[in-house]
Length: 406
Image (cartoon, rainbow, N blue to C red):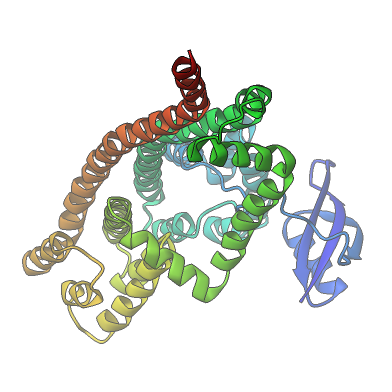
C-alpha cells in the first residue's frame, strides 16, 4: 500500500490538498473522486515528503466537547425536520473547529452522492468509531436523532471526566515546575555569587556546601548534557511505549502506582460502563458493544481484558462472570452487571455504575491533589533549606573561627 499526495477541487471549486493510501495511482484517483473531489495532480510520496505528524504524542484528536456540541446540534436540527444533507451543510458553516468542519463538508459531499451517513463518516478519521457505529445503529432502527443525543451525552461525560482529572493535576504540576525552577536559579545564579567568598576561606568547607558547589558547577558547565538526558528519557519512554511489550509494561505499571493506579482503574470502569450502557440502550448487540467498548479503552490491559470478555460472552457465558474472571474490574462493577442480568436491565445497571465511578473519579482526583500538594511543598521547602544551609554553614564556620581567635 502506497501513500499518494494529491491536489484537487471540491464541488464548489475550492482547492484541496491531502494524501490517500492506495495500491496504485488509479485506485488513488478513484478514492479521491469518492470523496467528492476532482483530482488535478496525484503523486507518490517519497520518504522525505511524507506527511509528518508534528505532535510528539500522536495526532491531535478533536476535543470531546466539540464532538458533543456537534452531536447535540445535529440531533436538534434533524428533530426540526431538516434533511441530513441540509443539516450537515448548516453544521459545516457554523463549526469553529477547522478539522471537524472539513470532515463535515467531506461527509456532506459523500451523502449527496447517495452514500449512507455512517459510511460517509467512516471515511473521515476525525469521527470516532463509536459515533459512527451508533449512527449506523440509528439508521437501521430509524432513530438517528436518539443515537446522536446519546452520543452527545457520552461525549459530555467524557469531556467532564477528563476535565476533572486535568484540573486536579494542574496545580501539582505547576508546583513541580516551580520547584525545579527554584533549584536551577539557585544553582546557576545564587550559589556561584558566593564562590569567591568560599574560595578565600582557609578552612575546609562542609560536606553539604562542597556537594552543592559541585552540583552548581555541573549544571553551569554541562547544562546541555542534562537537557539531552531529559529529552532522551522522554523520547525513550515514548518509543518504548509504542512497542507491544512496552505499552503493556507501562500500562501495567500505571495500575500499580499507589493512588494513581486506583484513579486509572476507576476512570477505566467509568468509561467502560458509560460506553456499554450507551451502546446497549441504542439496541446494539452485546458482542458489538463489547468490541467498541474495548476500542475506547486507553489502558491496553483493559482492552485485552474486554477482548477476552467478548470471546467468553460469544460462547454464551454471562458478562458478569467474564468481568470477574478478567481480574481487572472491581466487585462493584461485577455485582451491578450481575444484578442487571438477573433483572433483565443491564443497561440501567451499567448507567448506575457509570454515574458511581464518575463521582468516584472526581473524589479520587481531589484526594490525589490533597496528598500531592503538601508533599511537593514540603519537598520544595526541604530543597530550599538545604541550599540556604550550604551557603550559610561556611559563614557560621568562619564567624566561629574568628570568634575563637579573638
